[in-house]
Image 1: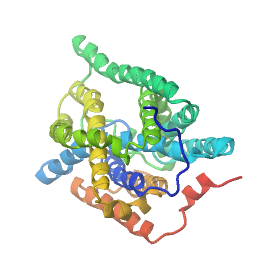
Image 2 (image 1 turned 120 degrees about the horizontal axis):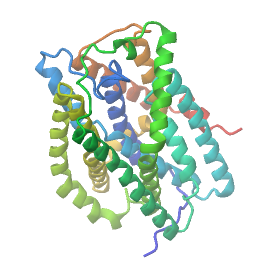
Image 3 (image 1 turned 90 degrees about the horizontal axis):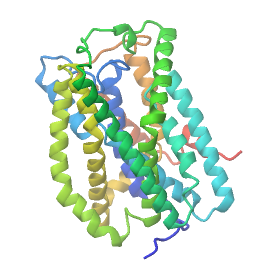
Image 4 (image 1 turned 180 degrees about the vertical axis):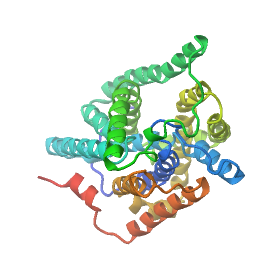
Length: 382
């Protein structure tokens, strides 16, 4: 059966927006956890204080449940959004979508250079510009492009494992990094805003140079998967109910258990030689992306069975994730960087503070009718 082409959408569906709001928790928590140690330290930072079992537990749960799960979901939802933005709009809608991508790219460059080197908006904008060429193509062409993109993405994902293996055989990898080593090269260790921008902008340039080689194929494959899912109405159509049910029941729990083990290994890996941690980071996508898919399927099944109130309540925040993301980076720079206040809260306190920020943003979003400034600017017509 031929899948439907993009069709006009009567109203914005709350489920994708609710999923964005939930994925935002992962983005904020992971970025905050590793902020003081970035860009040269462990991805999730270290448990603080090291003698506190609660700090280790919280960090392990963050690594197991959140690390690497948000960006696949957000990238796929980004692709779905491209489908809906072009639905029934013709050439004018395509022009507007391209304009939004260029604005998003500008915002990503500014955000990555000035606030947080780990910006993801740059990659989303580049992948959006590439994906727009395929959104309205016949299904056979889109499917062929999706297969080729995933073939390339899987090869790129396997490459770090190969490199780590070669380094292990050659005896490379270097010594483990000490907690205080190269503190002047971390965002928390800089002194003054000029030093902060120099370290941050340099890391942003380096990360995106590597990202074009290693991350862009993966993100593009996820965005195109979202395009296909949007056209197939995978989140909501009854024809996919059996597939979603299988993912949500048969595959979800084994993957969840494996990811919790992975999270514990990530946390304890910060105390081991660097090459051990490199193995964990390299294997992460093979555990994190499937779990993100299964969690999405579980949420879609809940919606199909009438459990919709949670999505309707979260949807307002999902329409304003861009503003919250940028605000959170500014918040981290002002509170935790050496150029700002230089505050170093413990792991538990930092997690609680981040959840409080997300909750405050949710409350504000529910009281707001109009788009927030960044969302309004992105959608503004010339």
